[in-house]
Image (cartoon, rainbow, N blue to C red; front, top):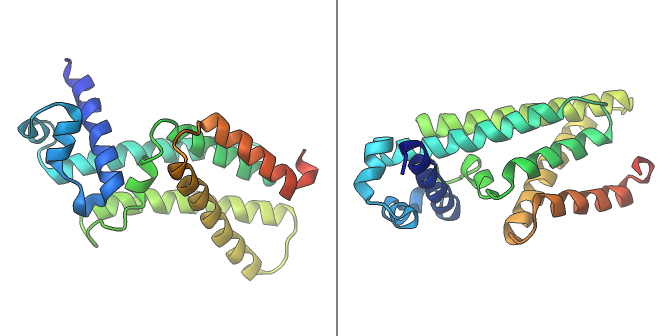
Length: 192
């Protein structure tokens, strides 16, 4: 098997292992077993357990950030939220567990792994805050605390949607997008 393909196979196995158990409990022996390789091969490719985890975080984070950035084009109204969630769903298609890598609460409190995951979270959160702010500004919505609450509601909505999807892995990105469309049509009838 070519090296690039084997790396992807290892990263896929590692992402599932670490997302399911967290950094603290994830096992490179289990990753090797999932990938059908020997444990020393992981270290040959990624140098260390941390190197493997960092590669997983970088792959997941860069895909999510790029998807959300692309979704920011278009009108600054409620459709921006739908575009953003659709982009997240499409980026996570077949790898919904990638979200857990970026938001892993078992990561060390400092160091390269923490810095990488925090960097991706900050960028995703920054784009979310900008989007919410622009939608509220366009709608000429009132007080600064309204924006603060709306940002928290947005973060909670995205996290809850992904968590729900993780509990319903039979759902495709298209299923999630359709479900979102139905819910938004009820919550925001002017959109339809």
